[in-house]
Amino acid sequence: MELDVRKRIILKAIIRNYLETGEPVGSRTISKYTDLNLSSATIRNEMADLEEMGYILQPHTSAGRIPSDKGYRFYVDTMMEEKEREADEMKELLLQRQDKMENLLKQVVKVLAQNTQYATMISAPNTRRNKLKFIQLSKVDAAHILAVIVSEGNVIKNSLLDVQQELSEETVLKLNILLNTHLNGLSIEDINLAMIADMKQQAGIHSDIVGEVIDAVAEAIKADEDLEIYTSGTNNIFRYPELADQQRASELINTFEEKQQLTGLVQETLLEENGTGIQVYIGNETPVQSMKDCSVVTATYELGEGMKGTIGIIGPKRMDYDKVVRTLRNLQNQLDVLYREEDK
Image (cartoon, rainbow, N blue to C red; front, side, top):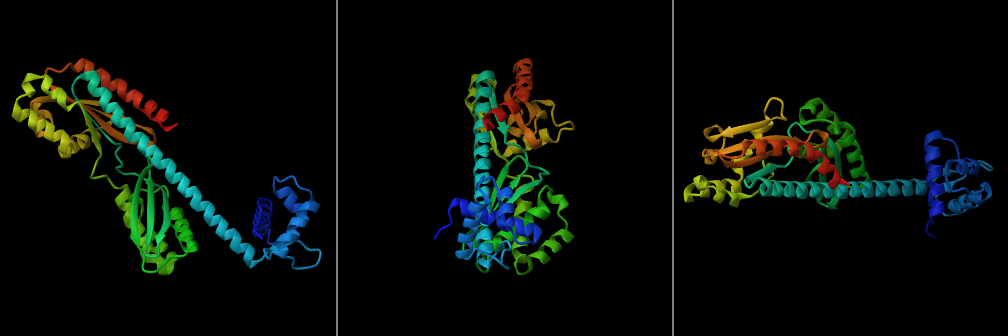
C-alpha cells in the first residue's frame, strides 16, 4: 500500500515533532502541527494505518507514536529527493539566467556597433576575487560524481570527479552539507589549510573527494583565464580609409576574431583605480599592438552582486569622441536595468 499525500504529511509531522521533542506524538499535536484541517479522530485513523504499515510505533498503550526504522528511512529518502529536486531547480534557474546574460551582452554589443558605426566589444562579467555561493554534488554513475559550483554573479562551473567506490545517496547528501557549511560565502583566499584539514577529517574515508572538490572550487572562482568577449561591427573598419588597407584591416580583424589581445585590454580597464571611469587610448597608448592606428575608448560596467566587465569602442583617431563617451556613459547606467529586465 502506497502512502497518499495525507499520510505523507502526517508521517513527516510525526517524525519532525519527535526529532524536536523526543516525546511520543499524539493526534492533537499533529492537528496543530499541520495545515490539513483534519479532526483528531481522522488523524488517529491515519496514524493507525501508518502503524499497521510499519512506519510508526506505539511504545505504550494510550501513548503517542514514534517513528520506526521504516519511517526514518522514508523520511531520509524523501528529504534527499526534495533536496536533489531543489538543487536541480536552482541549477536550471541559474543556467537560464546565465543564458539570458550571454544573450543580453550579445545584443548590447551589436546595437552599440550599429549606433556608433565603429567596431565594438564587451566582456562577460569578471569573476576575480569571487566568492562561492553554492556547491551541489550529484551522482552520475558508480565511478563519477558531478560537482556544480555556483559563484557570485551566478557563474556556474561543472566538474566531473572520479570516485574509487560508489557513493550512497546519503553519503553524497552528507558531503553536500559538509562542503556548503564550511565554504559558502568564502573566496579562495579565505580557504586555509586548517579548514581543509578539518573538512577532510569530518569526511573520513571520503577525504579525497573533499580535496578534489576544493581544487574544483579554486578553479571555478579564480580569475577566469578564458575570458568571454563578444564583438560586433568589425566590418565597420572598412568605412575608414586610414584603417582599410589590407594589412591594417587584416590585423584588426584577426584581433577581433582571436580575441586574445582583447583580454589584456579588458584587464587593464578593470584594474583602473576607481573601476567605473571611461578611458581613452589614442594610437600607441593602446595596449593592443594591432590598434596602434586607432583610438580605443573603454568603460567598466557593473551588474548586480559586484560583477564587472568592460565595454570597448574601436575606431579611427578622428572618431566622434563626444558621441562615443556619451554613449558609453548612458550604457553604463542602462546595463543594470537591462540585466534585471532580462532576469525576470
